[in-house]
Length: 476
Ligand code: SF4
Image 1 (cartoon, rainbow, N blue to C red):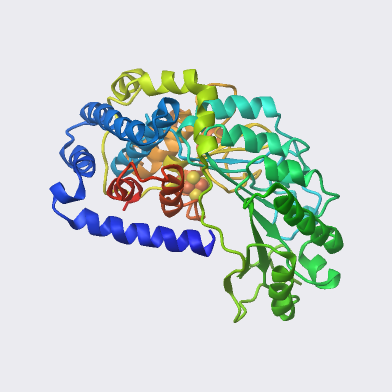
Image 2 (tube, helix red, strand yellow):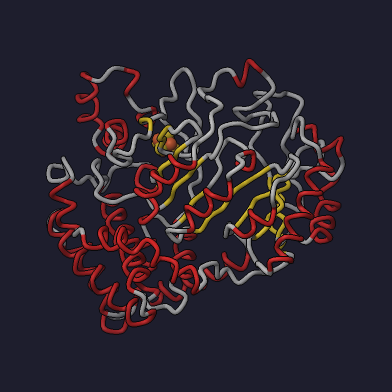
């Protein structure tokens, strides 16, 4: 997240917290209604009824402000879905009526480099443990996946373990995400004869992390094995030139410089070079240790660690043209908007019997995110499946369910009610028991602070009070 965006979000949170502490008549009726729905609710059905009322009021406000029916319906739907996801999370439900607010997608599982610690490591003994077929996602499958996930989501992270720009139609993935007003970001090594940078910029991509850990080929290739620095820097120049030629402030370019023993002495040179190249920001970061894969590579923390913003951007990624473009998917949006939350409750098998266990531990990924990899596999988080115990593949995407898959429900239940889970898995083969039940890792997710910033960008005129945004994004 760039500094400006982070500071704006901090200010938002401060104002919202203040509003949340004010008497209800000052904090606003909408925030009070939301608050009451969460505190008063005697069951899921009643909560869903209150969500129908909340969605209608949010929609009316948005329509008054923007005068655009499809846009107002879409944003009201996203906000209401966020409220329902929060409700499920707070109650540790296993069956969800909500959809994820983040999608993580690998356009391709392939990568041309072999960085230590990655599924693509050049060390066969290490890479061989992962269950990682090097397949490529078709745009058609992605379109169908987005038909389900896109209308509810706020962010699309178009990367995980593959090199996304190897996909010749990467820009089409961005366009399919922007169609539903998602903040889109990717991460790349840029070590390839690059592509059509004009097309990437014109696609509407909002943010790119550029992984460049060196200013000389010798230092760079120690970790980015098989990478070619000259090619990378040439591509950075091309991206900057395309942004200039198209008059586009996005994608926001983040040079990520991971520090190791072998490149720490190049940190200052990297900061100078980033400024000369015209990227927006350089992030000097300590990576995870990778000695377990390559004992010769040692992560270190340098005194320059931190974020350096070089070219500021106001973070307003959602333009009036983007809001207007929602007209192109108006029938789809209207259908989803008119499908009441009460009806969704009745149509979701198991939602009536799902017990509430608010005090139980859980994992936020299971309520917030859905991951689709290049092999069309659905997974819960950013971790990679392996061939032994990490059973993270919940299903193959086949146009059907993406939230209440049997393994996903079991994963949530494992946290919410261990006893019930232990009983349930007696009839489930080990290969279909989710790794989540034994997971102790907590990889960092996209984060609700970012969602707060996304709402602010989409609703630029603040038709929805910040106290509502705060309530929706405070899941503590
Ligand atoms: S594998 Fe771990 S981090 Fe991933 S969703 Fe399951 S519990 Fe959460």
